[in-house]
Length: 208
Length: 208
Image (cartoon, each protein chain N blue to C red):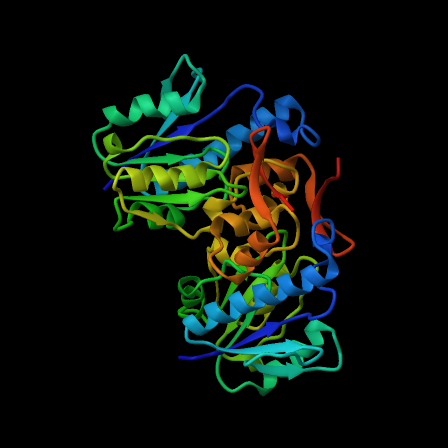
């Protein structure tokens, strides 16, 4: 089974909650590096990545552009057209690896979810996408569980911190510097980010 | 295999980073409820829980008291005495369930670790405890990986958000209210805690 992996991606001015430590240009390069890590992991797991964004950019991978930026509308217009299973993977999951994605796509249930930290949904896998619709933002994980129930779809929640850890804020960079192995970690290190311990708490600081 | 599960526990004035939303008495009751959830999960996974603390308290479970409160000294004095495999499980992991613990204790490696959020170590499983020692605090996860290497022990990192999520701060309560099923979630709800969404971000608020 080689499901398409839809990866929503915002090219311009992404990850604004990292503005305290990264300039807009750096945030764009960092988001791009995280995307590449996610693409790499999805290919390793035998998925075919499809980048879903509002504009095309330089990349070897298949891209779909949509004029409307609303994530729910975009994905809900794509799902009914899909032939075969669909994986929806957020682009800010640089700890994703093939093993974790494999656990998702080999579920014996009709679908699988991975919650994000703080109530969001980081990964959705649906064997029959025409039977499901997405509802991101706010407490989307609980909404996605309910949509599965309402649609009569059995749903497994995959217990993975690698897919649970979305990188939004400065504190999240700690996880990437500890557990990351790809381009986005390398980019942070290139910018001078290192782990630090202050009053027993681990954080990051930028050395240059 | 029924390993002993050592669960370090602080009875008096625990979880001070929750002082902003819980009184000392409430923090003590909450920590106790989380401990009970962890004990329940470890028993479900066929482990024998042993509570390691500085004073005895009312509980059916086996307790070891130690005069010295230092976690590393305490555990490092227990490990060489152990007959058989040892699981060390933090008491603030109320999302722990039998399935996640089973993944840890059935590792084919010499030992397994689960990182905590922010560089800590939430779970350690060691088949031959006399060959290992612990070094908690600070970036303990990376230290524990290195001790395994230095001791020639193969080590699996278990990818579980349930065991990765330690409850230290107000934001962590979101995870418990979304994914918890045990006594500590019930206790929070009893105190009036509910999920809230403000500016698209999920948080908790206390209604009474």
